[in-house]
Image 1 (cartoon, rainbow, N blue to C red):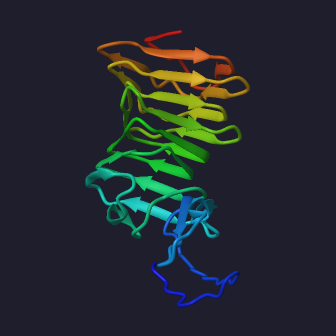
Image 2: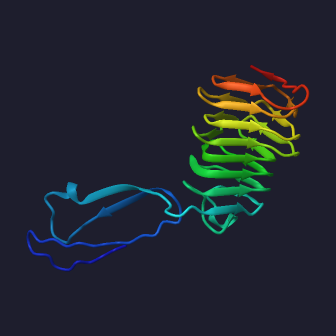
Image 3: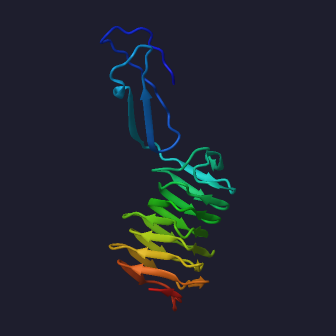
Length: 231
């Protein structure tokens, strides 16, 4: 935005108000500068910046359209936009790549691939019924007070990615959890990882590592759960 205030008297002032409507939660950086035709002996105060945190006032729900693209591609979500703080994201198929650290309220993940180096933090609930979480340098984190529900009959795959649980995780259903090319599950201090079924944990290429600093237990099922992992 460029604005001409015309002629200002010595010592005079003018103000400008700009109203912006963000399309997603995050950080909004505002930059401003002023100039004049006359010589300014104090040019160092002609620039200013302000960083504001944008929080969605109304939680929204987004569904990935099944294609391949970046999380920040607004046209690949329905409705158009980007899931952020307070929002729910649903991924049923396709490939979604994180390009910046992202925090959302809820993730419903039933198919496709979630990858990318940045961290995805889920503060309310991650409902994992299918699909692959990938990328060796990437992390998915369940925040303290949040829940991870691994359920259903479909296979879930952790491909190299790190899964941090700081909340309460429950693994139910008959679908196996597979490790492809390694991967890591960190059950953090104060967290609970509860296995309530006999579904197995399989590995391909290299073992999945489980680092437990909280509570890891099997509280359900009728038989033995096979876990081919490194503790």
